[in-house]
Length: 502
Image (cartoon, rainbow, N blue to C red):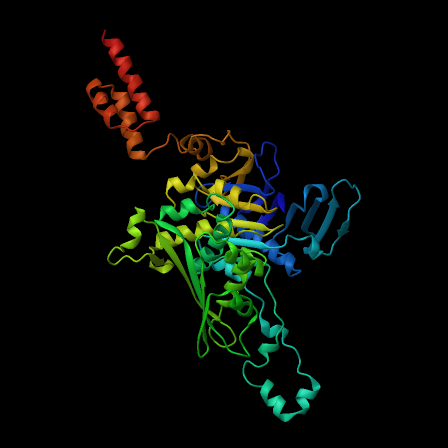
């Protein structure tokens, strides 16, 4: 899936906002599309992402949104690409009317043209990750209530008093409810261990076929060598618990320990052996599909408890010297549990692993400021990791960011700058100075109009010193001013003063 256009006619501060994505000058190598929304706080970035989510949820449930819109995107491979246009308007007595048009590559006649929405032409899935508030996304992604789909008991069951009493027990009817999956996947921060597990399984599966897995530098950054194993603790009720996922995992486990209703599956990952990680991924048709199943099992089930109660990851720490392997540091074992790491390390590992987990196709992936709390070194890796890990999947990635370091890895055609006009409404500026490979400070100056890079205090202090033109003061300042624009200005001013004195 690749976005071409998202026009929002009348939603909150998004009035007549026309976002164009498929613009000339893009630099993408792969099947994916990557675009960024940039702007100061309050410029509407997250609101736009949620608006896309509202549109998608409404289309999936055959409902209308409270605002009118036009959505244009492409599905499928280039040779067989389908262009989809969906419009919602209120042109007839204020009643929302939707229309879908689908045209295929090389054909002038629409393959579909009707007011009804054909679900076959919608993106397969909407995947959302946010470092901000998850509350609004929780409402959109909530799984439909199973109570709404309870099957009527069979006549022979109702005729038998014993059988009827069984199905009337609390929870018995729910066991016969049809499973309904939401097409919106919210990847919540409470699932960090599960995210890390699924992403590092992809990493481990590639270690044997490549010199090093794609996330090896990430592991080394927190002093780890590899994911050595993991365990999953289940609470199983023989009737009420969903057993499909457990039954697929159990044959692949290294050990199965049972104590009453509690089942612990332990998985050892031999060093350099990619067979088990790949088998786990194949059993669930991919990393994201595995995450979805594990994520669903961590919700409260019909038993009143989550079916999957714990996800434990065991990381093998790096050793400074090979000979250190025989001597453990007191209080520091060779294997470390994921939850022993600091909050920052857990978040860092999981968010980097998230990029390896996005192995879906023809889906819309929304990432809301995924680089928050990263240091500048790892902000530099965001686009590279996305290109390496997800570039061969045909998805649209739409990312919000405040980081100019991240923006320096894409062209201006992949950046939509959002600003608020004098009337308070959000506007988009899509004609920007070149960003690809640019100095992040220059991008900050050009995009956000912040002036020269650096803190306000140092900027004002140095500006005033340049105006005073005191040679002794400037000579002292040039020694303590860091490299860049202001040091250049001070040196130039010192040369002017020296020249004037001779």
